[in-house]
Amino acid sequence: MTVFIMVAGVFTGAPVWQETAALLAAAGSEVHTVPLTGVGAGRPAAPARVDLETHIADVTAVIDAVDAANGREIVLVGHDYGIHPVLGAADRRPQRVTRVVYLDAGMPRNGVPALAAVPDQVLRAQLAERAQRGETGGELAPPARDEWQRWGSTAGLSDAALDRLTALAAPQPLGTLLQPLRLTGALAAVPVTGVLCTGNGVGVDAVQRLVDFGDPELAALTDPQVTFFELPTGHWPMLSCPAELADVLRRAAAGEGRRLRPAGVAGEAPAHLRPFPLDVPELPRDRKGHVDLYVPDGEGPRPAVVLVHGGPVPAGARPTPRDWPTLVGYARLVAAEGMVGVTLDHRLHDVADYERAAADVAAAVELVRADPRVDAGRVALWFFSGGGLLAADWLTEPPAWLRCLAASYPVLAPLPNWGLAGSRFRPARAVTQAGALPVVLLRAGRETPEIAATVEAFVTAAEDCGAHLELVDVPNGHHGFETVDAPEETRPALRRAMRSVVTHLTA
Image (cartoon, rainbow, N blue to C red):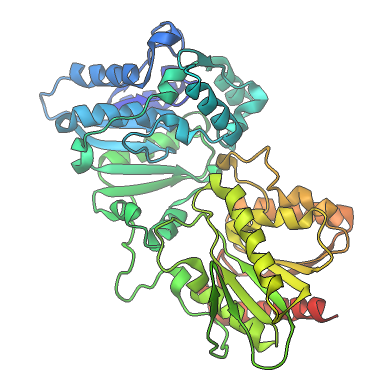
């Protein structure tokens, strides 16, 4: 018999599992939904007396109460914050746990508090300041009904389910978020399953791309004991799709799920390292700090196109983005048009890094404009993927020397779990201030729904305000279409987009 021990996320307690638990029990499993001390009415306690270790003890006690006889296999399920006490308990009882399920949860590390996983970056900073002042004994009030989106996507929740989530919500003791998680490494051999809610912005393919970047810290995700599932819903699947969640949990317990491919497998180049689809002349790079310039022969100065890569890209990724075939291919294509192509590395390693990535891009632009081979009055910026949010700064009061802004399969509004709702990195809003700046947008017809929604919001805003927007569609294109789709599908769009950018730079 499989025994499921389920731990809910921040502000929520055992009652949110009601439907999923009933379905698992009906299928023959034993189910325990853990009431966490100080969260809700189940186990009342003064907030000052509750921290992460308190909740680890709550979960450990349930593990110890399960009869080990008759081959019972314990599967621990942690949703959101709940993965922290789950991992702490599994680390203390590794012989009793047969699998840990991360339900739309991060990957906590030893010594790091749950505060690091709080998606709202403004709130995270405020709580960190309170912790520095020693204010660790209070509690955090739960969100109002219209504030849950700050904690994760509410996609899939009916009005009744959102009402229920709000009614069940309880204050979260601050100590549970501020106390570091302490792990000994004893759970390293315990099999793991990640259940990703795609409405919250991340799917299995996105995780595979992160692994493909070559960061050694993510190599563990390719272990044969690690599996993945997706649910097409938002952050609270136990309320939006309890039957589908129960089915996934049963399959996870049986060891099913998708496994990731290790980076660098022979004969299987990751998408970002596949060849550029257009034939471009070889041209050496001129490396200056975090910037590479591809300068054609002949007299200058010349217009320049600065190519801004996407992300987040893990800090340990090798090669770094400015050496990826796609970016190098674009830069050499620019040079073939008689202009200076520019690639750069910026430090968008996490969704919390947009501020410093924006500073890196601004510094790169100034370096390029100061180069005597570049016409400082004729520069275009071209953004890719998650780098699209960085376009917001340049759409807001564009400088006179910025002659064009282009974007390929961009993210044009923060995704639900990025915690950037109140930030300035919102191109879908900034485009209303773009004035006469030409914008060339390459749109992937088979974009992921979450990113496609941000693109459509941008297009609508641009049309409503009369922005100078040119759409270049790749009808059968996927995200990263230059290297994931057949060249014949992408070449016409690439040539058309480049011709438009060149025209704006030379007009």
